[in-house]
Length: 139
Image: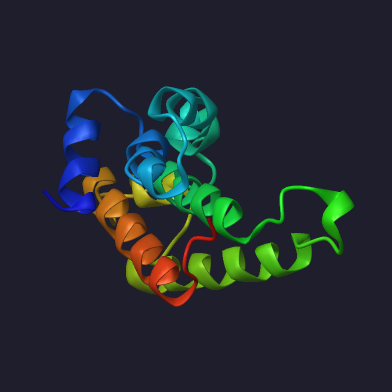
């Protein structure tokens, strides 16, 4: 089963969009899925407020896991570079789906949705896989 298929299965089981995306990458980072599930819980449904898409937030978590040095004592901060990479991936997501906001993607205030949650999840997983191919996980 591909990561995209697994993420869609997770979503069918009840994982929110952020959990579905972030949890399929746990093994890559040596993180317990239960912990990632708990971390990502508040990011589904556009952070519970229909703001930034939960699937996209899950992707941002993966970028942070890959890019952060994880310790300010180890040297210079990676925050600015992580923000740059997040912005780039958000732009790619928006190019595909016309928005990064949950309420717009779901069609709130318009006559129809522009992208389903499943499509957002699939696109976020695909972008995460592309990102990790270009930026391998540091062990």
